[in-house]
Image (cartoon, helix red, strand yellow):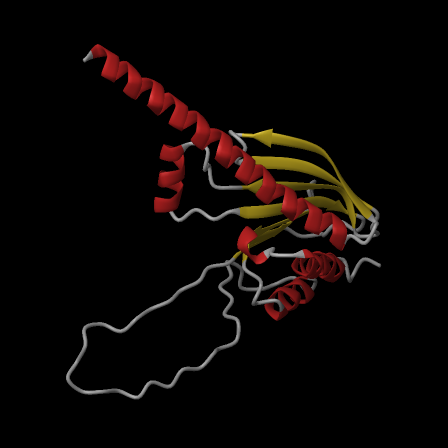
Length: 217
């Protein structure tokens, strides 16, 4: 009996080790692909250095040396599901946590305001079926903005317009701050599928930086 218990324990340890090793490799490969797409999207004007893995390969921090008039001291943070740790992975899936990429940097022309943009999606569905049928008319409205301020500074309008024009990008949040880091943006990692998507995202970051400092140069 004791021998079978020992065999079960050894098998469980071996299985746990294989699970951990496999998903550490998976997470590192996934994050590596994202970094390659971002660096390629810089078209030779950016290099990713100083990679630092944290939290059992579920978080990667890196420095982006970017030759740009808009951004200085740029950093990237990739947050992945904790796949190497089965219990934490199950909890993260139950909580519907997203895998994200966060870009933060100082700006050559720091914004003179503080702005936090948090994007939410609402959806609904019909209730219990009824005997009759109803013809539904579906329309796609323009962006709806809920703000905590009644009056906006003039310099906020270009920023909000730029964000509204990119409504199809799944932003988790965008922050402008007069103190370092001046610009922070977090996006869902599922939207970064290739170099083209990464280039579009960097283009949006530049557009947002330009719109936030339009009054300063």
